Image (cartoon, rainbow, N blue to C red):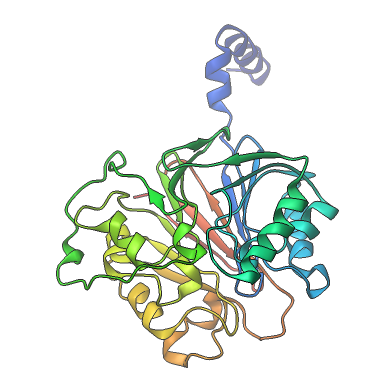
Length: 343
């Protein structure tokens, strides 16, 4: 068939079947930026619809370092505003950057678990600063099971304010064999145990971020039945501290790839690192920093570490995910990409 006749046929078919024409256009991917905020969290997601979600904002101070790094990642992604900011809990390495962020960038809706629940002066002060900064913004208190209204992806709340989902998610609910002989965990009265955790799903791709949820709450989700199921990508809980990262939780998730949002001297502790390293079937682990206070045996290879030096430029890790479950991880320090094919 001649090219001009083929073009006419395509135009005619698109006019007759507009929905089919839309499907013929390749769907945009989900983009996730793991921003280095030196042992806090700042994870920026851009849905295929172009809507954005920032999970946590890093620290206050440091001459606006963390807010600047978030804005730089947002600019890299082509954003002029952040539609939703979700605060996992009210510790300063997660909520501290909010005042500086709103001073320099337009933000839509703030989402959190509700008021501070920790009896500590520093946390009360950080929560007060957060309340002041978000005055005038839309504010939502999220409960377990709630789904954020973001087009193109499903962002479901797993845990919030010490509560969590009680029914297994679709495809989950099997008995967890790793619960056998797992010791009971102590109750944690800090904000960590109140973390607002989310499961982000894009087609067959699943990414889990539980903030700093600690072991007792992890075990309630993982034992005796695994209420979450398996995931493709796992942001290692609590920066890789051993106050979190119980074996039944991490092993039960069976992530293909795990990411430590650690700092040079915070997180990625040897005990928690080893639990993640030994997950059956895990394909790769990445770290935002080389863990200076650990040893060489408990750090991944240099090409899987984003920032090697303690005083660094704050390079990010980027994940680009497709609805068929495949995804690509890019280390912005090296420019090296690695693709994990659909299963």
